Image (cartoon, rainbow, N blue to C red; front, top):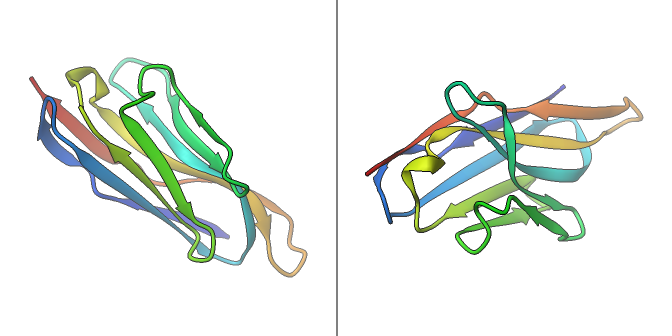
Length: 121
């Protein structure tokens, strides 16, 4: 069982910054992909940013140049630095991890519980 725990959401004015953190806990051998998705009210969950364990990143076009994802593979953590925030960035942000558990117990594909980010205009 792998659990993802997010922190760092909150309320910020447009143009401001927030940093989200995610920690993966449990029986982990490796995390191949770790990243962030978001879901706004009435909308589908969408990719924000992901990073592989080799450092390859993918960003949504709407956040390129404003958001930066980073990982600490030894600590099984990921951080999303969000700058120049806009009201349309308001959503619940979810951390996701895909990888392999230890002791040959198979793969995992886990989500965090989500953290609210609200950007006021």
